[in-house]
Length: 306
Image 1 (cartoon, rainbow, N blue to C red):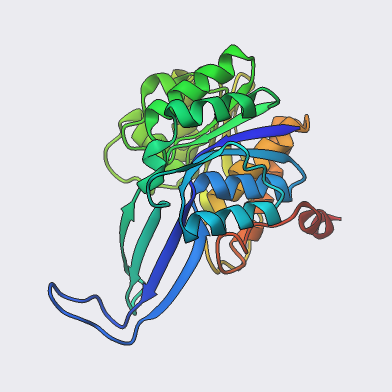
Image 2 (cartoon, rainbow, N blue to C red):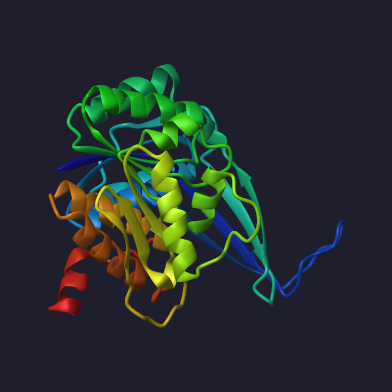
């Protein structure tokens, strides 16, 4: 049950400071931390921890961060054969967080701008040759996503698209996905909606999923945070609830959801049951600090519901 995963890897460099510096000012007293990140990498790890066989398609630099990423994937049983090493720095995000929890983020895409082309396309084709599904997230050039999705469709491979970030996503990409998995704000962005991007009223969620499904060709699963998820397909529109948990850190919950959903679907699990399991896994992930540390293993969830 191989699942190809096209997406990003990057390192998050976070500094917590007492307050944000003004232009030209130095603020001392910061606390620095570094963490593995990137939606593609996170989703591949979630698939592996759920018992699937992920093959990651991305690019990193020939630097400390790129080598650290390969060590991570080896330890997590993520096949990195289709990860290219390119002449650019591994993607990095620098995050400043003040005492009130407000943040400012700057991102250097670096190697991710090279995800495709002569060096990456043959690696991707090899990864797809043995894949049952392709998961795509969009921290990479949209051309790469379009071309990889086209390769998958020609091979009869199921395409699962997580349209994040959702800015400027080509219509032909999201409308042709077999399974489209946005959150509420991403769903609104795809539809070109204005106004409140954080609305979570039950009726709004159902209507949002229904409208998106009317324009998509496949199944739509809209994730709704603590409210679970809404499925819209030929069988209708319905909600799948998430368990109530004590939230510590929501970072990475969406990637956990997507990875577990993909692994369950490839295992042949019914859609509603797969979404229910993904909701439970995502809920579990927010009870821990950190992205990678928060991604649960399948046996953890099985023990909880046994």
